[in-house]
Every structure is written in structure tokens, then in C-alpha cells.
Length: 450
Image (spheres, rainbow, N blue to C red):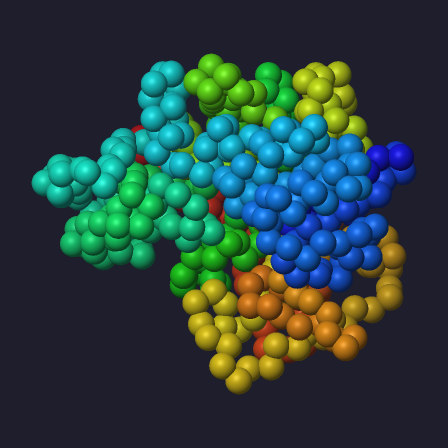
């Protein structure tokens, strides 16, 4: 019997819970989250309603239930040292300690780390702190011109990055936002705007061995056509074969090599091994690959794609990461395509609910699509009240279509989101063949002209 602590209560944690329970081991799950996700409740032995950064409550809960190890879903408890506190109490984690989770929680730390250890992948960048000269900041913007990106150094729920020409217009707006970041977190990264195609690779890590998962592409913008404000991610897709059609073999090799070097460098820098999932956001550009950022956890929604495809035993993989024996475990993924589409409240991400009805109805048929697990459903920011699902304001339900081709997976995922009734919306263009073809042609154009 394995007793496992899971922290978090979104759709990402729903699929993590499902995969942990699917282990060949008998598993009891003990969950901590600020609201009761009905999908996770059904898989858990006990569910503690508490903030994910309530360190004392989490440690007490883990000790009371004598858990074998913990898995952390969101980023906040990583930053607040939950893993560190659990380890001091004798509880191991398949998630990183705060010193190495800085790969996510401090964008400046990661840029400086790559520069210090001579790891390729950085764009042109500078890090400014709250004592930085305004003249230096303005001079750097002038050097970059309108092709800039401003990144708040700390955690902003995926919404602290703003791009010149998209979220910010002209140098003055960029400088003003950089000053806003300085006034808040006290540190800001200003870097060149990259042109290319983004892609995500998640890695299992034990501090030495790094195993990549299938490549995924995320869609941050709120509306079809990649317009509107940034979100936590409206959906993702992955191709059969594990790569994406606009990437070369060298692109994937570069992403793996950068991450292997970063895992070694962060160990040398901090004395702490990176244990857990490391999620790399990369950009394929005209002359290779650049690192956009790292997340020290499973991505959401990327977790729905990669864990859907995982053929291995997640409990075994977690224990191998903890024990430094990842090289002894066979990690396999199905050769299928996946498309994940989120249903969100109509007022998400920046609107106000007002008088809108927050009830949600899932009209899911019992047919061959569900029976054969071609369509999977993961509950996110919802709770159950008097037998009804109520949306809490963020991404509500994730639908994952699985198929032999991307076209089939997209059709199945789309059939899922169309079953939802309520004051909701979703992106219909995620995984569409025409959109993918545009990306292929765009990437070919960049590289032919380089």
C-alpha cells in the first residue's frame, strides 16, 4: 500500500490523481486544496480544505496519515517551501525544493544561470532590480526597440509576461510596465522578442537523468486566432510520434541538451538536485532553439496531454525520481495524438461575473467514445453544490481527445466541449489542420530566409 499526498485541486491534479490511482500498487490519496474538486474527491481517501501554501497544515496532514511521498501540482507551494518543510519532517517529494524551483519562481535566476554556465538558449536580456538606474532601463529598451518582452521576475499565475507590439504598444508602455514590476516584485527581466514557434517539453528528472515526454504546443490567448488576453492556457495538442510537424530533430535535441545542462548547473549552483517534473517552454527560431522559461511542475493543460499518453506506472516513476534511479525505469508513451480543450466561464480571464449564472451542465453520452477512453474529462475550477457543478471563475473543465491522428483527436475533443451547457466558451481552433499548416509554412519561411 502506498499513501500519497497530492497538493492542488485543478484539472491538472485530477489527471495526476487518476494516473497515481492507476498504479499496479494499491494507492491511497490524501489531497490538500482550497476547494473540493468532485473528480479528485472521488479518488481520494481524505481531502483537506486548506490553502496550498499553508505549510503547517500540509505537514501535519502528511504526518497524521503517514504518507510515503508527496506530489505538488501548482507553483505557489513550491515557492513557499512546502517540499522543504515536508522533507524536514521526513516526508519525501516527487517535486523540487524551493532552491531549485527558482527555475520557475525567478525568471532572472534562470537567465543568469544559463549565462553563468555558458548554456546556449538565452535571448538577449538584462535583469533589473529595484535599485536599477532608470536611465539604464530606458537605454536597454531603446536598444531593443519595439521587439521587447517584459517579464516580472516572480510568480504572476502565467500572466506576468507582456510582449511589445501585442500587450504593450511602444517603448513608453514597456518602460511603464517594467517599472510596475519593479514596484511589485522588485525585479524585472527585459529581453528581446523572439520570432518563431513555441513548443513545450516536460521532463521527468531525478537530478541527473532527464527523460523527455511528448512535445506539446499550448495556446495562451483567450480567443480563437490567438487574440485577446493571456490565460493559464486554453488548450494544447500533441502529435503521434512525439514531436510537432514544424520542428526538426535538432530542435528536440537542443531542448533536451539545454535542460540536461540546466539540471546539472542548478545542482552545482545550489547544492540541491532537481527532483520532479521540469517543464520547458522553448521557441524554435530561424537559427535554432531558445529557452522561453521553465516551470518547476507539470504544465496545465500540458499534463492532460502527456499523462494521457503515459503507458508507464506514475507511482514507480515518482519513486525513481525520489531515489535517483530514473535511469532504471522504462518510461513509455502511446503513439497517439491528443487535443485538450478547456471550457471556461464567459467572463474568464479578466471579466467580472456580475449576474451571470455560474452553473455548469455536462451532457456526456454513454457511448463508444467514452467507453473506449477516446474522450477524457477532467474537472478544474469547479465545485459541487446541491448536486450541481458551479464554476469558481477560472478554467472549468478540460476535455482530452485521443486519436490515431490529430484530426481525429481534435474532432473528439471538440465533441466534448460542445456537450457543455452554461455561461461558457472555449477555443474551437486548437488542433485544427489549417492552423497547423499555417505554423508549418511560417516556420519554413523563417528558416529559408535565415
